[in-house]
Amino acid sequence: MRVIAGELKGRRLRSPEGSDIRPTTDKVKEAVFSMLIPYMDGSFTALDLFAGSGGLGIEAISRGAATVFFSDSSRDSIRLVKENLEHCGVLDRAVLLQGDFKSNIKRLTQKIDVAFLDPPYADGFILPALEALDKKDAVQTGGAVVCEHSAREVLPEEIYGFKAVKQRRYGSIAVTIYEREGDDA
Image (cartoon, rainbow, N blue to C red):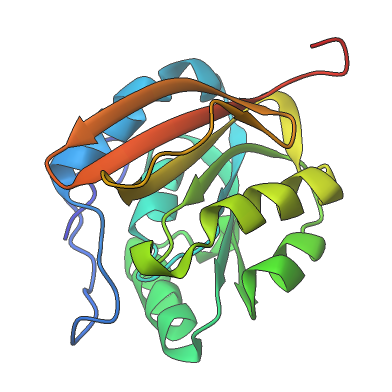
């Protein structure tokens, strides 16, 4: 696993041992960040909600994120994210949140421009996570939420103030990007 673009391009990241964490492939990561270009103008704030090894959030830092919140329920995952951040020399641009995703969303201290939701596919966490982001009003109007999920799972076009603006399939993986609608939407 490596950073594919930006200031940290080529930097290798530690991968988890075992199969509990499923890092996003380089192909999907490149496609996701290509779709996110309009949302990453200047410095931005991001959330890697189901961080795993931190690959998506570290990629966001490499591409200009001023702050990334890394959230995971696993202490081992948070430890791995911290090691990867230290290895890249960007721990100062990260906030680590260990706990369940709903509690961690409540702990956010600033609004998010780009959020990454890449939970275990079978657990059904995407819709509850979108609901929690809505309740906290955690995503800026016009901000993006990237949902990586099984291609067999069909997500709604609109939900909790988020509207699907892009959907792509990459084999058995699908990516849906939601945009946060404003009050006048």
